Image (cartoon, rainbow, N blue to C red; front, side):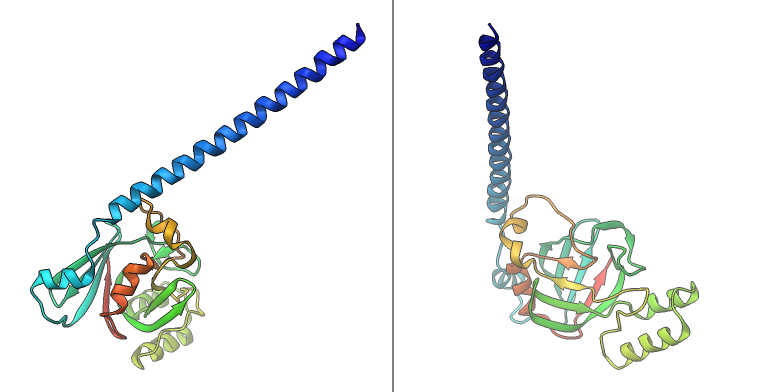
Length: 226
C-alpha cells in the first residue's frame, strides 16, 4: 500500500515537472516568434526607405549647399535640409528621459536648442559619432544664472565655444552629446517598427542612415533640436 502511494507521489511530481517544462518551452517559443514577427514587420517597413542619393535627385538639386539638420523630439524625426529645401527625413531615438530638456549630467534627457557639430568621430562604438557643442552659450548662461555652475566653469565653457572647440563635459551640465548610430545591435534595433528611446541623451539613427548623413555633413554643420 505504501509502495503504491510512493509511486503515485513520484508520478505526480514527474507530471508536474513535465508540465512546468512544457509551459516554459511554450513561453520561450511564443516570445521568440513574437520578436521574429516584430523584426520581420520592421524589415518590411524599412524596404520603403529611399536612399539619400535618390532623394537628392528627386529634390532637383545637383549639389547640397548649407546642409543643416532639424530634429523634432515630438515626431522622433531628423530632417536633412540643403539650405531651406528638405531632402530627407529619418526616424530617430532619443534619451530615456524624453519629457525634459537636458540640464544635468546623467539626467538621460536630450538637449533642446541650436547647436553645431564640433567633432566627427568616424569610428565609434556606436558606429559613427557627431558630437554637438552642448552645453552651448544659452545652456551655460542659464546654468550660471541658476547656480548650477561656477563663474570659472562658465568662463571655461565660453572659451571652448569661442575657440570652436567642443565644450568640456566636466561640469554638472554634462556633455559629450551628439548624433550617432547603433553599433552592435544595429540589425535588431533598426528593424523595430516602433521608436525605442535608449540613449544617454544623444540622438540615434541606424548605421546605414548615419553613414548617409556622414557623407554630407561637416564640422560646423548647424543642428536645431526642438
